[in-house]
Figure 1: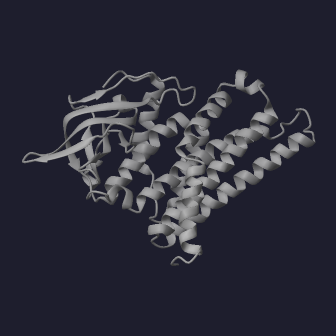
Figure 2 (figure 1 turned 45 degrees about the horizontal axis):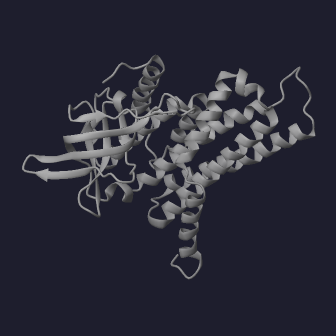
Figure 3 (figure 1 turned 120 degrees about the vertical axis):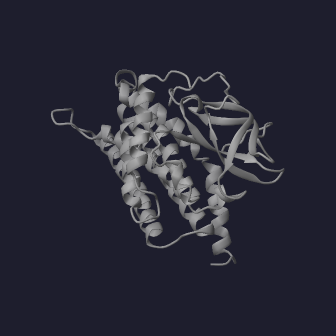
Length: 324
């Protein structure tokens, strides 16, 4: 593992701490979990971007009843499940067990983490999930140009794996089919909400400052409506999944609706603060400038019109001649 800058050391330490204290989603304390993630997003999206996948990996292993993986451990984990064009990470099985070979794209902070859960193709149609040691000599971090202006510390380049031992987590396909997959996606939205809430607060008039004119008040009202819709959507989802098991299309529809609601609210806040505050804080306020750039990039985990179309497809199945 390479040397770790001070800011990342702090973020990794927060991941270890929160991984030991925060609850899992859908087990009665989801409000508490998402509130903590929201607060973290309002503090620093770079820190949240380190903490969230560690919590997700912890939840994945919890769902797989792999409780010993984190017992007494100070390791920080990642989740590498993205795919890229023209390359596939392959899983091979022999008498000695499973191993992974090939390239995996979008592996955030791979050179600074200890372990990760990674998806790999077990054949031409199915992917399995595997736990791997990122310190194994068969793991090589590929250093490609990284020109991001947001989340500048969270480098998400590819890694190459050469016959790296891998421990299967669940059956092929389990990673996407498990209930926790969609709840993890809402956890990310809670982070977006926290960042948007903190940015929106910059529009609040300060005592002794210039009285807001009609346009400033309009921006403030717009932010209030956007954040209220996001907060209510997150709260309703937490109530629903804590009250009873939610799965299948109902879970996917709920998660997609919440993520889209929060993402659209965050985009509204970004526009309102840009229009209402002008260029000044972008060039003079370090936190504001970083948070704006970070949130713009982090929101791209929401696939905008494609996710809305996918939500529409699920909605159509259940409202136009479909079951339920």
